[in-house]
Length: 467
Image 1 (cartoon, rainbow, N blue to C red):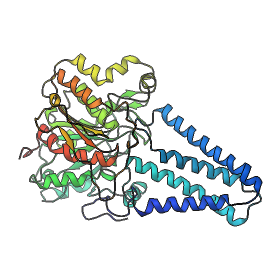
Image 2 (image 1 turned 120 degrees about the vertical axis):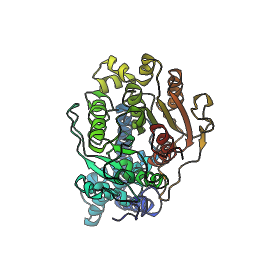
Image 3 (image 1 turned 30 degrees about the horizontal axis):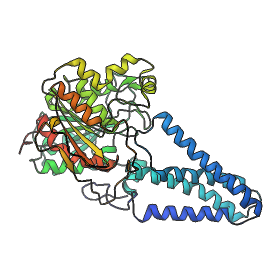
Image 4 (image 1 turned 120 degrees about the horizontal axis):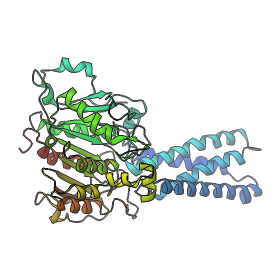
């Protein structure tokens, strides 16, 4: 699979709309209809209804499991449960209808199972906007190189060169302090990092993705390296060092960036990652030169890490995060994230942390909030007059995921930005709330990053950022 010259995975055959998802659904429906067929009266009146009932039950169980496990605070679209029901029903049709079926119908019944599962995956992907194109999905599945990726061994040879794009370096950061088992993480180095005989001391930002993630998601799904490169090109090659961290350790391990039974994620980010970036890539060690940017779960992490560690981080950008680390109800959260220790819940709850800390000095935050009905930013929460307020929904040539567009608000996320900004303001944290229409998708996260990068660059002291 190829991506364009700028390294974008957002060009090519779309997985979020267009002909491919529609064709897959049409072919699947046709295959299932052919498997059902007319057959006998007993088949039509007894076994087909049984298969439909089994499929419906399977969808209800999947829905219950997702809710009970707190796998998503944003409601799934109805189409997801319909396709789950079709998938389970297809399995039932193949098993129940196998005996006495002709060879071609048996073969078709087997084919209908992966086809219906593919449709489940397509709708799931459309919900969150995870893979915008076939190229992005292929790159993730095959662990292909990221745009502008180089190895650490290549960096000395690039020293003293002038380039139009930054470079992405995979790193294996020691877990000496945390013991947190993690995957490969990545560091983006802007063009200015290579310009002189030695690396300049640059500001840095920690990039944290959502609950189900890999460290490369900001680049594959969010395509943000093109945004950072564009910013650098308009600022004389200057941009922050970005470190794309692994807050989960595995794709489905929801740590919420806390320390607990699911791993010492917070310790990894603060005691392993940050010192490594400072010592290895020459990033500034000053908290005023460090920021945290997070999306969804990562947005919650961004607030939490900053207010818990103002001695390490001076600014945060929270993109559609929750009010605090969440894994279901409060009881479920205390049990799952903290092993039943309610004191640990209080230790990592950002509102509690801010109240206990008291007035902060030199800490600022930006909340990028989603809303089905855009509203004006609260002027009382605005650090820079005129900045907060509505902004247009994100645009994307490959289409956008539609997460959250089901009319049901995310109860954990709804109002979180305003509530957290009010609590922060009370403790002298300078903050602003920006609200824009859009779903809880990677496309919204990418647009929010684009909007928030100049703000963060100014706060953490990127050279020329005020220009």
